[in-house]
Length: 334
Image 1 (spheres, rainbow, N blue to C red):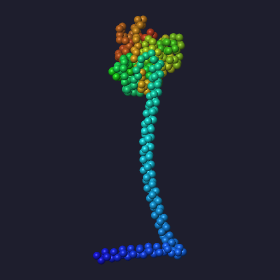
Image 2: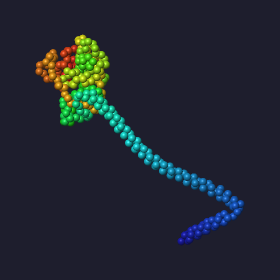
Image 3: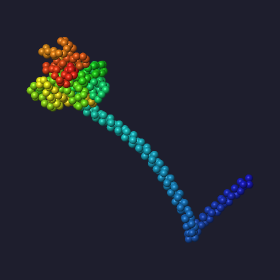
Image 4: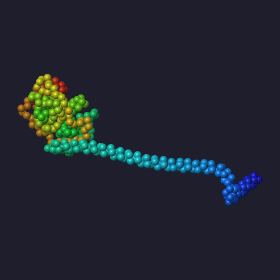
């Protein structure tokens, strides 16, 4: 109890002392400036560093607060800008895809105008066999859209292949690069006939086999255009296939063989046109049965069948010479 009383007395004395000091300082401030100059100097010497320290700490604290607010603001702006960049990147990607699709559709439109005598339907590729090349693929249109088996398929400036199977809303296409594909063709400048044989090993080099070319007058040259033949059993006439890149004489000295560069990019097919009109093929009575192959009345050309296959009935110069087609057995057209 006594200790508490002593503490109260000390507090009172301290308060009285401070009050007296304040009154004295107030009284001094009313004196002449010369009289209080030493007091000002002493107080300035003692108080000024303290004020500077307090002001510096306050400025540092204020700057720290401003920096924190600036960091929060900058972070928010950065997130906003990043969101805008992501949106613009996505929009740009979509625009690039749309531009590429527009270019492909324009190409298909030009192709449609080029073969405007045929009724066609556009389709998208929705599936393909494993590998880098579209040798066998599925499209999203079928019998409901008028597509039938053996319908010709075009894209990228020329012939892609032929429809082999049809469903209500899908169809399977075998392209001319497939190993089982053979197309009766001709050189557009001379009408000399030949066979374009698919070979997946060659397409890696950008080529297709050209065999059994009947160029007796040596008028066919590298760079000439090759199109589907008017006597083809399944392919409509005059559809561009490619350009001759190499020619050589066969060992029989009657025909020539070589390679063509196809006009279609068989690595990047996305959209195609399917010609709804089928080729009306009437076998010629003058074409005799190929020697050594099959029997009279055998099934017509169908490259989807297995077993012994006839040589091309459209080529009267067919022989067993060692051309690329003869080495593997001449496939029927299709």
